[in-house]
Amino acid sequence: METVGEKIRQIRTEKEITMTELAKRTGFSQSYLSQVERNLINPSVGALQKIAKELALPTAYFFQNTDEINNKQSPVRVVKKNQRKGLVYPESQMKYQLLSPDLQGPIELLFITASPGGDTGEDEFVHIGHEYGVVLKGIMEVYVGGEKFLLEPGDSICFDSSLPHKWRNVGDEELEAVWAVTPPSF
Image (cartoon, rainbow, N blue to C red):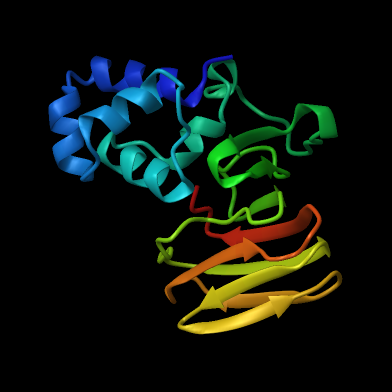
């Protein structure tokens, strides 16, 4: 299975976009992009979204296995725990696993885990749609529209995704949450 960095390099070269041009378009340094492509570092979710946008790809492309991109699917689909597609961000100590079979439907369903201190980064996200989440384990601090919300196990939140938002694990244990985004934003 190709890594995120390998997929970025492959698409960038197929589209004949130089590293210099991609750096200019995204606002990232060539050094940073080179490290991402060589899998020395993993981009944050926000960085991955910027790169995907400049490569004219949905961020979901990085969740897809090359063999699955054009396969026809049954109307009923099961995602086994050991077959979830995911993105791991070691620097931010978090992992997203796709619970929905893909991002072609009207909703994106994610299982999120984050080590203590793990977060979505300094940049807040803004996109069309709505988000709904429930914390299963740990303590999540969510910032939405300038307000801070503390969520403990069993607590849930919903908000308009056009409001600037981000989150972090402020607890002493691993955070687990289920998140729904509509329409899919990855």
